[in-house]
Image (tube, rainbow, N blue to C red):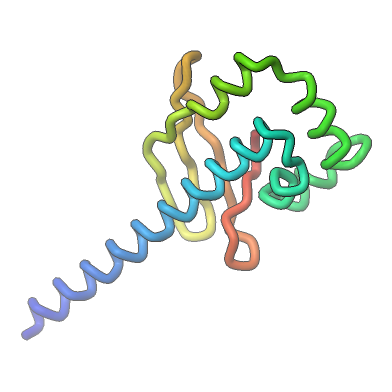
Length: 120
């Protein structure tokens, strides 16, 4: 009986961890696509407050300027970025982004139940 409870607890924890990893991936994918598409309102909503507030002219204005400057090739490359391993530890997560220029780790933090990006 004790073994069954331990096994059940392990399965529940694994399921929760997978769900968190999926949520992290969803946040990163949504941010990348929004940024590539010029949807700066959505992109800014996926950044932690400290990052949103660090833009000189406001998050939406500065991201709009950056997004507008992207070439079609850069937009395509962003949309094709592959997400690698996700490591969730409590309210912090790291995800590997695989692109044409190697692999880069992104960090996210859970804020009010949402996974928001700390670095971009």
